[in-house]
Length: 199
Image (cartoon, rainbow, N blue to C red; front, side, top):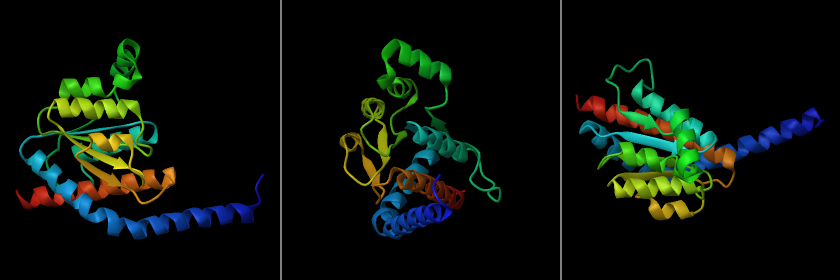
């Protein structure tokens, strides 16, 4: 078992990584995130929808962010529901599609069925190499959707299929996923602010 002092040291290192990432976040990501928020608010305002997908922890974050949009971010905010769908939650669709078409198609098939022109597809990935996300992005463009990626630090194959890419300034997958959730909360807060201002 690691000693308490060693565990404490490891925690301090992780917290330092988080602090450094946050310091770079404002410089590299804030302007891009503001643009994404404006695009989302405009899309929701005209009746469009937001879709979310990812694998593993990013699947959980997809569900989390879609829920915050449908319900609300804060109990202090009174607003109508915003249309947002996580493509990671329907076990029957996910398993049937995996069985019939393969796992690479699990999100693309849902995009083909539900996404319409001008809707926005969010693709969350720390690696940017997941075939099922790349196929979903391709399907979105076939339906004239807009693709937004929340990614890690480096350019990836998924970038080639995105309209907007937000790269988190960290090479640590844990820090990247933490920042994706931060981005999601900031995004929703900004969307709420913009749409409530237009009421």
